[in-house]
Image (cartoon, rainbow, N blue to C red; front, side, top):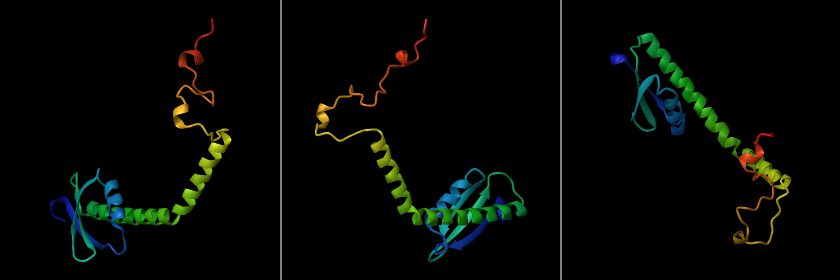
Length: 134
């Protein structure tokens, strides 16, 4: 814990590298972070406080980093396991939105559709929409 720094390592078999970067991002305002390989599937982390920190505060920073690493790993795992259902829900929402708007495919080519076409009636100039009544 010299030079306001704490060093520790962990096994990458337990945490994906994406989670390591995510956890590191949370701490970039509190500490300088340095990573280096510490053998096969191991990463050595050095956290150097941006402010002068005592031994107890450095240990707390290490604990917080490891908790954030666990949190990031869980979020990544949940995101992967819920990917299909999220895609399905978004797909259904988009299909519903297209169906609700009354938009129908036509046989017209894209060249025949002009920017001046306003099938939803939303192209009202600002001046007309908010003009003051006299």
